[in-house]
Amino acid sequence: MQQEDKLKTISYSGIFLSCFADYSEKCIHATPEHVLVYLYSGEQIIEDRNKKIKLQAGDCAFIRRDHRLKMYKNSKGEDLYKGISLTFNRNVLRDFYSKMNKSEIPKGVKISDKTVFKLEPSPAIESLFQSLTPYFDSNIKPTEGVTHLKLLEGIYALLNSNELFYPILFDFAEPWKIDLLEFLNSNYMEELSMEQIASFTGRSLATFKRDFKKISNLTPQKWLIKKRLEMAYIKLKEEGRKVQGVYMEVGFKNPSHFSTAFKKQYGISPTEI
Image (cartoon, rainbow, N blue to C red; front, side, top):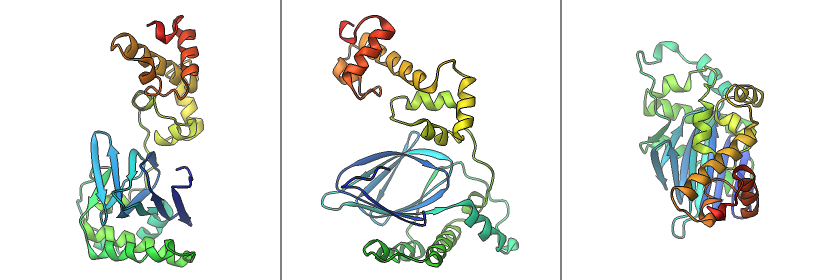
């Protein structure tokens, strides 16, 4: 997420994130680790494939790792967006699991295929996140010990809220890969770096480049430009759209760059269509 005057992100040990904004912020979010999000004020919309989950003040959601989501963080009336999230990395979860009494782990719990879980209100969740506000409203930095204890408190709160979190939190398999073409065809218009595409599809940058060579002779950058131009051609030719409304929609930021690239591929300028 970009640092801007109207968007402030504070991170302590990479664990707690607090965002404040007086405008709407859209971001594509990769979740390499499990995240627990709590909203103090404003509104947050999490878009997972064709589903939308809306969070308002007091709401909390668990986001599963190794998934790509779109998030919209909005102010609501005079209430600015303000949220905190806890990130549970694998080392913390492995350490927690190693110290558990295994006989107390529920048996036969089916692994859910959901990505985002909106949690029911509970005293455990409420007290956990309310205890974190002083660290973001002042310049006091929590110690490593405090941040670790808050993570453990978050794990206990999840496990006590629903037993389905046991197989999710303590699944230490490697991240899965998602289909590259499916991802690119769905997100060609987004401004993503190669590193982001690799991360969102569950790959290292080197693995992404190697896998991409198996599906195209073009570089990823050239493939994206070609795809954007093809979609622009369809919108202009078959849908009768105007150039001004198309170039940004397909992912170009500059109309002259769009026009030059379009003419190079199709031999005519987009206005001639």
